[in-house]
Amino acid sequence: MPSPLADLARYAAALEPAELAWAHLAGRLDAEDTQFLAFLRRCDLDTRGQDFALLENSEQLDADCRALAVGRDGLDRVWAYLCTCVAGTPDPAGRQEFLLDRAADGRGMDWSSTTALMGTDRPEEVDAALDRSDPLAGVALIGLAVTHPDPANILPRVARALAADDPDLVHQATVALAHTARLHGTVDRACLDLLRRLPRGNEADDDIWAFVPRHRLPWWLWRSRLLPGR
Image (cartoon, rainbow, N blue to C red):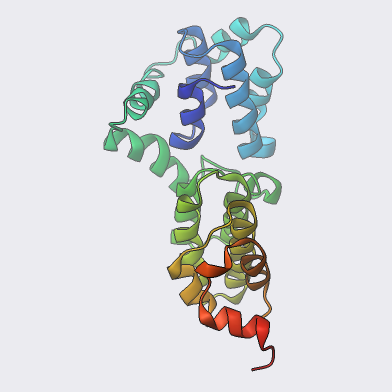
């Protein structure tokens, strides 16, 4: 199991290779946590993640970390921010710099790779993609739905995409909503209200009916299942 710091770091920052290397050399992360985070970031960046792949598979981890980190200044700053997150008082400036800004300028994920985006686990990456109308925002949203453990971080992004004018994005949002219902057994009112406007029989209708407790479902979905064609 990853340490609390490592488990939080995967969501709270888009780490750079030298920052991860510094944390291992400084004793903030043991070898297992370092290689766990290197694996996740290598998946985020696909073919751009060569330095993370080096750390993930390293048989001389200390030496490889030194090669990445020595001579670099300021590598401790992201870890100071992450420690505020562990303490439950996250620094807003750190969140902006190490998470939001990196999501906005594409350093968090490889936005040319659908393989990488299907592993999206930071909701802020989806927010940034929707803000810039990225053509693969819907792919990242589906990735978030199948990867993130908390539906409260998924459903607001699904609702935003369901309200879009782009029919492809709306369809991808229904797929993401279907995955959320299947994996978490839940849906929220905002998504249901937007889903009602779509043609019945879509992926989300089916999985919400199958996996969300029936007493939580609206009358219009009951009617569509019990009285098809009406």
